[in-house]
Amino acid sequence: MPKVGVIAVGQSAFVRAYPGSIRELAFEAFKDALGGSGIKTEQIDASVICSAPEYDKQRTPAGLVAEYLGLNPQPTFYVESVCSSSSSGLRTAYALIASGLHDVVMVLGFQKMSEISSAESQERMGRGADIQWEAPFGTMMPAYYAMYARGHFEKFGTTEEDLGLIRLKSSTYGVVNEKAVFRKSLTLDKIMEPKYIATPLKMMDCCANADGSSCVILASEQKAKELCEKPVWIRGLGMATAPINMAGRDTFSGLKCAQLAARRAYDMAGLGPKDIDVAEVHDCFTIAEMMAYEDLGFAEPGKGKELIRNKETYKEGRIPVNVDGGLLSKGHPIGATGGSQIRTIVLQLRGAAGPMQVPNAKIGLVHNIGGVGIYGNVSIFSVD
Amino acid sequence: MGFEQFGIVSFTSTTKAEKFVDLLKEGKVCGTACKSCGAKFFPPRSDCNACLSDEMEWFDVPGVGDLITFTQAMYAPAGFENDVPYILGVAQFDDGVKVFGRLDKSLKEENIKPGMKMKLKVVDLDNDRLSYVLTQA
Image 1 (cartoon, chains in turn yellow, purple):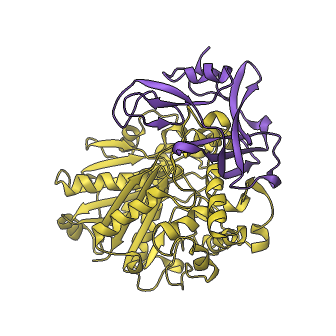
Image 2: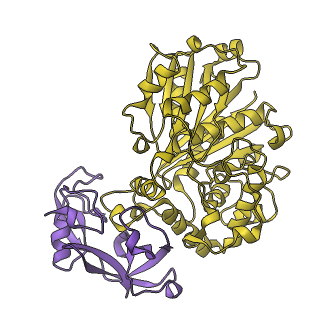
Image 3: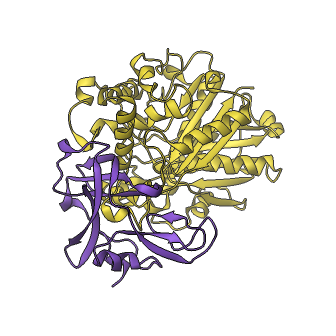
């Protein structure tokens, strides 16, 4: 398989309400990626634009974004897998390059969620589940993940406080991430306040909606070496899916799509969980990070709670996870999230992660989930 | 009126599976079984993804199942605000049939536990709508 490298990454600040339009929001990440990279717009052969369309008034945003970024007349199109859209974009861009069709491809993810109310947003998110058979009951993302939390508690004896410890870790790093929407320091007492959203998940178990954009530029091996001093190579890409309907799920203590995606990514990379130096996982809810520890093989099923209790997923621990604050602190602008996770890992592997830097990180992993475990994307990156 | 009568708020008006609503009116909660290969589906499907047949028959979801997981929603999406709090859950019935839905309003969260025996009950809603709930067997 030909080598494909990441040659530039960028991200807007993630904010509650971006004071501009979607094209301007997209431009922020693009500018951040190109700035100082030496890469010129005309060197980008094609673009893949990613978002969840239900938030956009603009129809077919790929055309709009490509124009605003100066990427006409190059090919552009739209890729969507809700919260994992930009990881699916990465997969698409990889294929475009590995096939020899293009040399340099940009993946730009964005989401401006602030144009609709929180209840409307929950209703749209709920429609990311089965609208014929589930949404008529009043479904929303916290309730779905809450059912997984209950399943995990029941099977493994995990507690609400274990989930609270995950949020505590997140806030430790959110404080130092200047691109994060939630930068307040939290105490476990504050996290454990019984403000339930969907039992057993409380306010602080949930990430916040945000506006934001991310940009990842990929290149063929030759182009990557020409255009970038420190390319970061894609080593493994795993993707898997599971039934959208809860009635089709065979377990409520882990995400099958993530387990299968991880296996495929590890197989492609010829690596295993013990080889990973730093990971970004999809912590839209604290329980999602707990399940990710186990689904990715960082802990045996049911032992994820030991990882967080022993602080093994802190920066100084055995397997640092979400040391940029994760979705819980950064916020979760749907289409931009995967690209933001990839950016963090690329910065880590380049030794450019500032106060969040994990010493000597050589191999990194991104776990990005779409919907409640409908789409699982796991991507592995390394410096050589 | 057809399938849009199903549930508190409907997002689907037309489906080949709309007989589901007629059966609810008869007090039955039914899935579909493929006449060709016997595969059973809940929620009902109109097409068999195992053998590609579109010849289906309806079957009653078997009597008593086990609650697998549940949550009490304290907030609701637009259109459901007046219902909070409400409990959602998944139960496992015989023949591999799983059912997602609301739990009966009479059940208090503190009395609900995974493993609890559940059965299905048809409920009439306002404005000539209807649905089903999981209730204690």
